[in-house]
Image 1 (tube, rainbow, N blue to C red):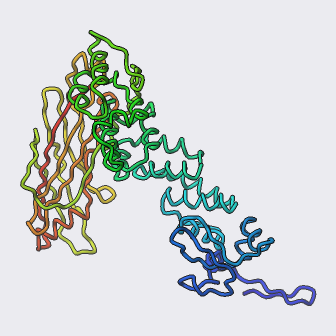
Image 2 (image 1 turned 30 degrees about the vertical axis):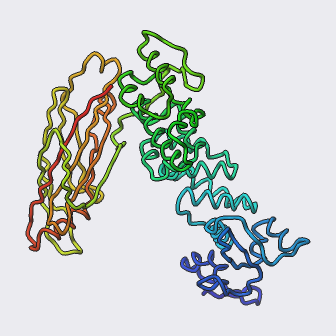
Image 3 (image 1 turned 180 degrees about the horizontal axis):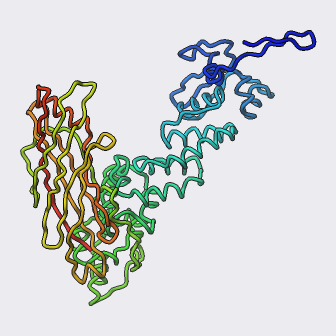
Length: 459
């Protein structure tokens, strides 16, 4: 502290303490105890949500932040206990912001719930932070349909385009999420109405819709014979006339979602030899959607972990072996010392790929595939070729440990993927777990990883 006199008065000027400044924003939280039940001079109570969770607070602080609270506590009612129709996490976020001026969001879904609280109690500064977080951090594809449904429930239209963008750009992740099969029909309709999806073709739109519809039929006890009429409002968004005749026969003709009359009409139109009018509940649109396919980061499926070996072995067209040298070191200094990066090649009459892997990057060993030779047919040149590379990397261990297994399926567009395409990442921590399971000494040991591959071609 620095002291000096001015005109006979003693003036005190305190030195700046960054640590104290950081804590200053928490000054109001010091009015509470650790469990929030017996703070200093609590004078109001909030009963929150269906669970009736109790929050204590201070009228003055809540009223200073919100005119709604001011009217509640200092208006005609002068209430001391308030029932709040919010999710408890939303109210907790609101209270944190009122007491500290900041908010710690857990996810876009959490931010949406807090946004509802900010709107309900007219705290615009908090609302802006919610919007900024949601737009800046994006919506996770696994929760986007649930997020959209809450927006409809709360009557928030400002995030609709953001939801659509997430579904469009991360379609595989959306349809493979746990929530997809339990989504509401309105959310599925948003997915089906989009003119651009990260799929390969219309048949995938139908297959995922059929999977959801069957789950919905089980939930609502819809009879199989009634399914062709029950989902008319949704199935009209499937562009059946953009599906090939072969795909229709193999993947649609046995579906309970179409009546025999509807199947006949679609088949005749696809054959074009005996066209019939399309039923009113089915789309006659012949223009294809704009499918976004084949990026070097777009895994269709990705599984990594340590699993017990199974007796069922999937067949792969190609296999090869990779050898890692692992440094035997103390727990505090474990690392991948060296990786032999000699490329391995898989040769197919239509294309050949060079498979290679890299030194440790951000805690991962990365496997990549680079297209070397490609033989295009006239059909592929006209319609575009998509190569699907299915990979499995496996490092056998002792039976007690399980095997290290990394599986992935990646769609590759040769016209867009000019550089090596990432096909797998093995976390260093799993590699070190294998080392501890297999080796006891502190000398370099080789870890053999078997790579198995399938190649599929479509246009």
